Length: 174
Image 1 (tube, rainbow, N blue to C red):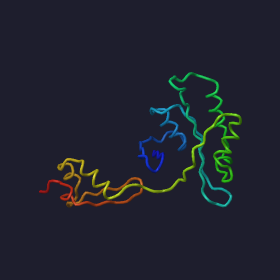
Image 2: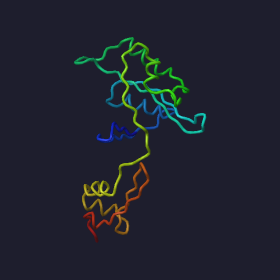
Image 3: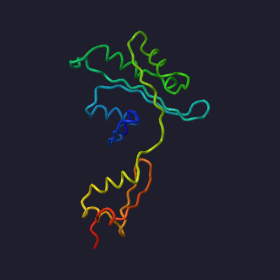
Image 4: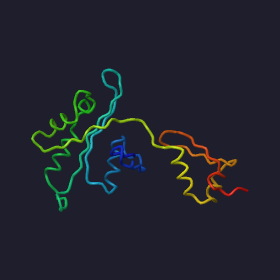
């Protein structure tokens, strides 16, 4: 599970067990077990009329009042019910902007919409990052990782394979 909040922020990565029958079920399980604020989400993906793949999600978090703690209230229950009632057609509609959708779901409420960020398939791995990570291991462990003097690291996000000479990483050579 990766969370990126912007180009200047560090990406947060967590391991999430596959729970339930969908990605949304797994994310809900993550939000329930982590130190996150209470949240509700509706997520869907699929092909739209022109055959292109599209995904949409509505996520709300329950924010505590300034200096206060959360209390059980009907407003949160209502907001959760509204999000959970969002239809697939709404989530996948390319003509329905996030602002219009939230205004439609919560008419008369004070809603805030963050600037949309496009989803892109990209990875921030690099030879330099892998090298720094490997340099953090003791030389004996690097030696154990090496096969024929080469330490191989495969990025599990993008699949890029990095091969480094163990001796260049400070491994003990026989």
